[in-house]
Image (tube, rainbow over all chains, first blue to last red; front, side, top):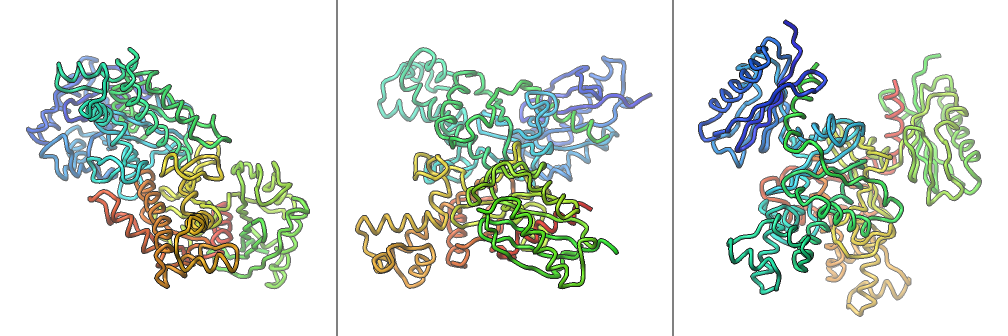
Length: 320
Length: 320
């Protein structure tokens, strides 16, 4: 039987997504399973293997048809060795040699990448970055993650710690970030920080249509904020502008560091759509030096939640 | 005759430095000439050719022994095509296809790079970055230039505009930078900006031993400031701290973007030596997240003014 398919795996704290692709990255089948990380790495590996086998069986294929598998996983890791050092959302995952474990279980070559890089690679190969050589993916969720492709290669950096883009500092001495630094982009522009800034303003007595939300639900989300921007609330607009300005400064700094042709935005907050991106573009145009205003395209990512799975599969194809 | 030597050329607004190297990058001879840019590109090419021939003759060699030449040059440029778009310090250099002109004149293959990248490559191949795979070079002079090596390759970015590190923004809405932006690192930490901040403080009436310098010479330099720091002047220390803090934030942001193992400092201001670097390290340690304090080495570059010439020669060797 010919080895004509690859597997792309996106391991998250909640779900494992597994996709079956041909070597042109056409999706042949996909399935998600609960990660159940608390049951430990061995259990997670079994979940992945079972899920993979089910998808293959549905296409009348089996592991002998699989050329290679790619996996994207969270947490600081040794990418080359495929070891997850630790993963905040997967307790019990400490120094897990997941690449080796998975290769032994699936009996195919396995390539490992961190989740943000895998998603960036997916968008680069098959999404919004198709055809460019230099791009950045920013994932706006609870935190702000990212990946950088430079000259058609993912940046890893010494120690595999490149592209922690949410923790670049844009307001020195500013808001406390969960990472221990002050003034990180993430402390202003993640979904959580955006909601936190609004909540703080409300608690300081600012009048806003968001007060009713806070009172009735006890908390507000970044989605609430963008809904209230759309409805014309002034405080919501102010908070959304703060998020957009922080992201615009990050984009300018990325432009001056790795020189991307486009910067793509993904993650939960991108649900705000044009309201978010138009704001980032407005501040970008206002703050960038005059000679290069047009030099970077700020766009929405297009693969959505599949990006990591697609990127992992693409890395598996690249193994040759 | 065997083609056993390469030429490294560092073209600057004031001087042209030409070095003759063997293919192990051992320096065999060097010579500098005035650029005399006002006489135009053709004249500059002749200068380079004449200087090259003189160095070769002194070693009883000629152009037939030269395998290739590398040239580092200032200004925005098309690196692959070897075209200088314009160079602020070389009036009359607009869209000059210097790589092609030089190859036709010298009759050897020529590789082109911008000057900051060439210097970074020199330090990477033969200087302080020898043996690392990921580094940054920051050049602190009139402005702040830089180069980034990631996974053993120079970052160019789309449009060859990566590594404009002095124009990353660290104080949004802050000091006006010459580039049109506000709050750039360069607007705080270049030699000129460091001197300007001190001058402004003195003109606002701050008491300082620097007042005597300003009165007697009408201007102060960054060198004066570090001398007065060493002598215990409080304002000078405050200004130097501002420079160190800005550079530390840049280093943190670089760490979180390209993940270098070391960041090397070069340029005129590095004359301040430990006074400067110790300050950067102090702010870096204070501002970086706690888990990664030790992860980047902040060091002085070691090749001095030869870095660009060495880097250009190394690129010529790499042409094979």
